[in-house]
Image 1 (cartoon, rainbow, N blue to C red):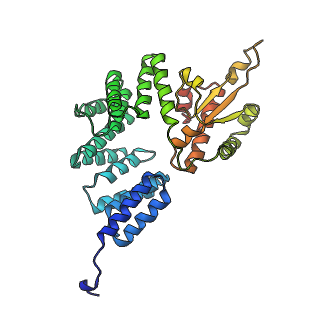
Image 2: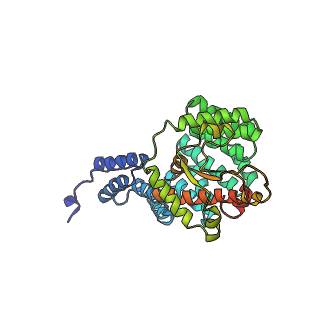
Image 3: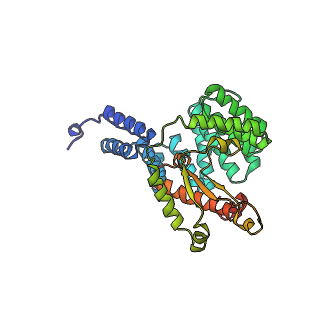
Length: 347
């Protein structure tokens, strides 16, 4: 077959498949997104955007090694493509990855970014990475490179605010969160972040005001596509409980595990985070032997379904988050602090 016999590539069809795939990905329809991106690859196997999207799909499923392969392939095809650099860097910063390679990728992304959004995304990821690695002086130096202007999207201000908060610059964090709210007054992430500022300052009244606003906004949002009926969620929780060591199960056999859609107004009004995944109510086990003559208190572990599903990306992740949350709240039942749980890898 000669070049003249090869049919011309229909780039309109390729673009249509890619656009549909991105749209379905944003709607969390992973199966539909993969079907569309595979159709694009059938027409053009060496399409960097398609490999980048496949990487994002695999990462959302927890298949990090395969995701990294797709991101590397996208970069082979287009070395200047910023998106796969940043996604690959995030994977390399996690678990047993290579943080130095991640920082190198991020630095390259900063240098090659062609628009403000790419540049801000890369710069903020560098700050987050350095902070997570404990390289705080470098993180402070990097965050100082942020331009003192309104960012193109409110979420960039939220990310910048969290970095300032992590570095101990509370006033700067508040300034960023307020800029986000100026751009989008109903951005729940910004209200929640501002609540963290007031929590740091010990201003419970303003903290609770923010928490209650978050509750109002969160409950207006539709549930995620992988949400399940409460009875199915309860079944998953029961299975997670059954996987705990026998001694712990024995001690917990009379402790109810209650599933709630979202933390109540009363609970939030006491200063509890509206986005908590779980909550232990009762007297910790080590203290029970020291409580004499007290009115019997019904211990209870609450699991907040909407919050657990919100931070997950699929049903498998929901099950894992239930297990982690249950273990975490069980730790509180046994009198372990958050610091104790963090040291045990259960934070």
